[in-house]
Length: 326
Image (cartoon, rainbow, N blue to C red; front, side):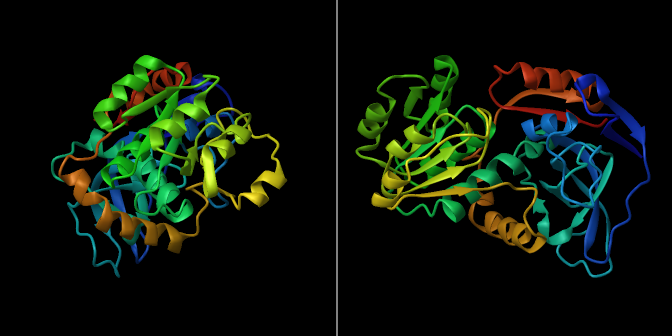
């Protein structure tokens, strides 16, 4: 089969389609014929050699999320059948014609979604779902601040919080792109860099945020904690702004605030399965009904993966970039 690999650490030019062995499913695995794969910033970091997958995964193989149909099932599989359309996450290698995944970690694709639309869902929505409720402990009526809301995970988080009835503010560096998120439930867009951002956010939320979901990282820790009220929870998901910062432990202690972090690819398999099953029960119905969605900025054939990586590095797009096989 063909698979997208990084021949060596470097820029988009190192990406090639290589011929590799087709994977064989274990007793509790399914083999999926991949039709589409979402592109994520983690793929860019992995391509450069900065974000290798967990031990046991080929660091050259690119891709974290897939959509396709079940092509073969293991001997002990009972949840999926050959021909079922499925989507989900893998630690690496989603940009291949075939992948094997644990059956219980797959998610059914709602009939209304194309393969490209389905491939845009898993990383953004599973991450946001876990960040808000499992790590953030979001409770009914609590306010949420999302930084950066124009990212894919940010867009998913805004929609999930809004759909659950939470007041939500979202930040970004581009006012026009932020304004475009109003149709996704972002009623309070705030431009990053505003001197009174904390004041604006508290005014919009009617008080302090209970949960701040941060995709930026270094340089904004003090501001994030200022957005939070007593017993507020900061959930760090991304490090676009760098991985270093300082914290006033006295303020953190006196206001009984907490800082949580998460990555998706390094979770133990049973936690990944449990998350997928909760997501299927609680969130998938809204995706199936069209109440939640992610726009597709552009679809590229897998042969143009390098161009897709360049587009993501350039930034400025709103929505997902997706790679497809013929």
